[in-house]
Image (cartoon, rainbow, N blue to C red; front, side, top):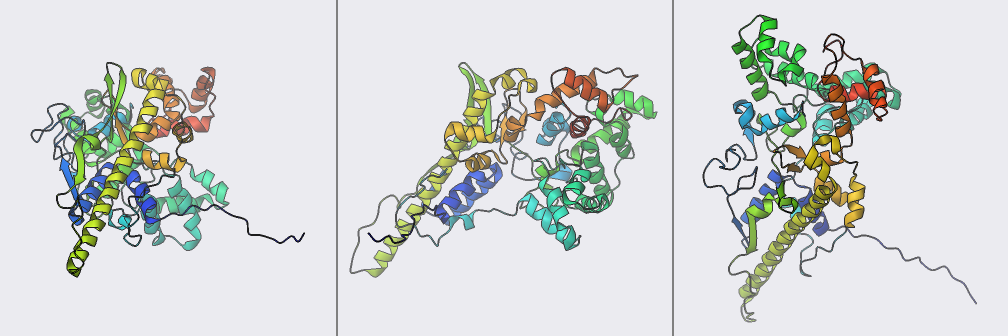
Length: 480
């Protein structure tokens, strides 16, 4: 018998424009999907969209300019806002950020065999550079090519809020470069937009922003002092005590605090928006998912589902009769069929987005019920890989579904979906409690805090205590 080598069959995944478009739509943030729907409706006459006026923050029906359920303004909840005209803390989403800070798959997407592969719908979706890509591009003009690996490490270790999660010493050791070079590249990163990006804690973030604003206008004289020495007490609204220590009228302190809360923002990455980076405007987060306490437990709602209803427009639902003697009529028939298929595919992608978001949200809510009922101390360890396994989806699909998405909790707090996977939040809450209960005359050092955390059954190194303390905007024992 003669043996001859035969080719080994291999299975390959063909990634086409349809799959890319579906994945892109799933990844979009709330304001980006809004733009994508508006763009598609403008370009495709077959797509008809009925939009229900709802509050973009709580999902309640909206009958005027102000939501009667949560009190938010319809104009305030538009995709972009001018950062210089932000309202007071209690009435704005940026105020919500401030109140939260110290306290805190492969599917078959085919919609018809006649879909034109060259007509890539992803090109019509308004997707710009990511924040990381934009920062690296800006850094290219400020540093030498030899420092590019340092820039990549710095940008790659920014968390969702724009803070640097690794020390320059760790990067220096990892890349085997002098600490001074890493510090220099970090200084250049601090000069980029959005202001405050790359800060290592809240105080440094606000100081960077204040320095940038000072070049354009003169802030109230107390602002720098409050940020440097009284940041933790501002979170507790101890304005009268601060005024007595500084020997100034309390009104001056309140004016400086108002400036901080309306001109500066604690999460610099949230201010990044592809359409507004160069216009001085900022983007405020708004919820994609509403979590409510119902009679049968916690319930999940999607604002997009309540807001949009899609259907095929009149004249595109049925195909015209073919008249062989009229070439222009055949051309019309092809056009109607093409637009019809394009509209159906877009609708299917959006519905698939909603289905995936709902599945992920319902699983998270079911798994984290104690957190929703009792607070951050009861947040259970959870990973995106676990979600992917439970739902039988690809882990990349879960990452896209949770990226840049926000959930409104039953207690009114707005948090990123990624917080449900952040196991350090409950640990930080314990650490915050220890610091809050310390003797004012003898503040606990990071070594002592690490020992107390270990005694509570949470083994922790001193450097980890320092990292978490700075992320929470809490000063050292000497600063406290």
